[in-house]
Figure (cartoon, rainbow over the protein chains, first blue to last red):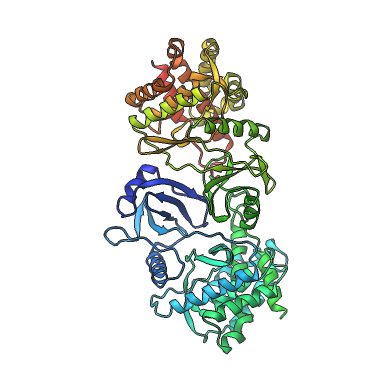
Amino acid sequence: MAVYTQVPAEALDAFLSRYDVGTLVSAKGIAEGVENSNYLVETTQDRFILTLYEKRVAEADLPYFLALKTHLADRGLAVPRPIRDREGVALQTLRGRPACLIEFLPGISLTEPTPAHCRSAGDALGRMHVALRDFEMVRPNSLNLAGWQRLADACGARADEVSPGLADTIAEELAFLESGWPVDLPHSTIHADLFPDNVLVRGSKVTGLIDFYFACTDIRAYDLAVMHTSWAFSADGATHFAERAAALDAGYAMSHGLSDDEQAAMTILCRGACLRFLLTRTYDWLNTPADALVTRKDPLAYRRRLDHYRAL
Amino acid sequence: MAVYTQVPAEALDAFLSRYDVGTLVSAKGIAEGVENSNYLVETTQDRFILTLYEKRVAEADLPYFLALKTHLADRGLAVPRPIRDREGVALQTLRGRPACLIEFLPGISLTEPTPAHCRSAGDALGRMHVALRDFEMVRPNSLNLAGWQRLADACGARADEVSPGLADTIAEELAFLESGWPVDLPHSTIHADLFPDNVLVRGSKVTGLIDFYFACTDIRAYDLAVMHTSWAFSADGATHFAERAAALDAGYAMSHGLSDDEQAAMTILCRGACLRFLLTRTYDWLNTPADALVTRKDPLAYRRRLDHYRAL
């Protein structure tokens, strides 16, 4: 939630002259995304997001992310389109950082989605999966089972500093998932992080899917599982809202839908999604100073979600 | 450079319903102002800045700042107007913080102003001083001579941790200013912090004067002195640009101008302005952890400016 790389107006003005987008009217650094520096840029023609990629995004992955967003935007999905300069180049360098000028999408992110929002968001996920059928680039998911094991090893017994018994819970859950993870289900490009923060809405209409920087190739239905664990619970993870969960499934069924095998695997996929966020939050919790300006997200909100699915 | 208080979209939507401004379309936390949380809010009718006042702004001062901005906006100055709700109230509470919805002004802040920008900005300061002739509210300047003395005492010998000999330089300069500070010059409401960051421009036209949170009642010509020390030097303070300085004076003369007494006092007023920023930066430097996400501003950039005026 910070702007790490400052871009003086003069440098921004020069940067924009590479594009056919008009001239600079206004620029505000925005506190969006923990990974990158972002500016909301207004020109005489339109509004854009300017992203400077900071060290947490691997530069080698950027062509993948930009191709993915362009593919989806070309197919009419509400996804922020990377803008090309006059020479057709989208990925640029600015202030020594990889940078991209991106379409601005209106809409707000909800913290308490209604079932109507869940239906629209589930439908948007399904439409994204349809549009990705002919997207051929591949990016392995570094936060797959093997990645979870690495994170669990890195946290080790210190997980108990977050909450007593957490290290054992993680180890048990990893063993369970390793024995039954549904690796034979259809794979696809997935968003892998479609939390309510990453969906823009107006009213109950989805106006944007954003923040594709965890996108990768993995089990397609896992994408819906991530949505279940993030959309169908109270923020603290203590309350599951069955109506929101049903609306996610109903929305997804409108545009894509689950096979019987995928449907049968949803509980274990949701357990995997819970463990993924439990692990990254636990790791960040143990490795972020308590007085840092970055807000540490509570790992226990995902332990409670995991408990919900373990009890099923 | 952060958003300290998070405002969920639902809370923002409810907040906006107090006003006749349309409904929420988009909201982005912006990394502007070290003192407050700011959102760039778009509604179906217009764009606004929503400011939540954090602890560094004294709540008791807010009615003064809002009245000042309203006074200037009413007189046609390019100043962000506080928006009143349907009951005529501008100062609200949101998420437990004092909050105000404020007009959005286009324009960018420069880091390397040209003489043409300096002329426009000097003129804008003069027009502001004209418009303030009938503004009757008074706010003492806590960063006056007595305030500088308190800051110098708080830094004490530790100022030498910033740069060897700095504590002595500060003590000498304070003694000089105390013996000759031109207290009899005309007083007025002043902005007191009109750095290039706080002036929005398009081309060479000033489209906004912003960030009035140091505004106070003090020697009117001191406002121009603050501009001299911030607009007429390179960022590191090592180079003085005489052409920019002349353009500031020429611009100010277009709309207001200095009396002979004020003109004669400009060097000592500039020395005071240099000491003020040297002291606040030294204090912040000594009291901000080196690893904090907040960027510490280099105090020596103001010691070099001070050296320029001491050599005259």
